[in-house]
Amino acid sequence: MSLFRASPRNVNLGLTILRIATAVVFINHGRQKLFVYGFTGVSGAFAHMGVPAPGLMGPLIGILEFFGGIALLIGLFTRLLSLAFVCDMLGAIFLVQLSKGFGGFEFEFMLLCASLTLALAGAGRFGVDEMLAQRRERGSPASVR
Image (cartoon, rainbow, N blue to C red):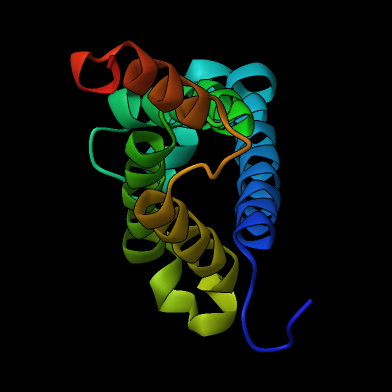
């Protein structure tokens, strides 16, 4: 193992660890929004925090975080969902946490950065997205010779 250069395998392991850790956090927060507070409770909380269209955004964010988190966990639609999580965290930072200073939004900032990394890099080799890409490449006419 080189101190200065990561092997492709280690890069993929790193992406997998980041993806799973990020997914677990989003799943837990989405679970809380959906199954502890419910649509009414999360809509009320979002209204109290000043989030626009709280009756729509509260449930939508709960669904995104829970079900999108599950998909992220297995590496399915990683780039698309990660972009949605970037938007989610930008909203959380700018609409709710920014006035509290960095100590108030450092958690959301880390989730934003993790999501942005996954949006740029994808799920890595150990995700469903990679398996689907390989399957598609094997079935494409250019790969049949």
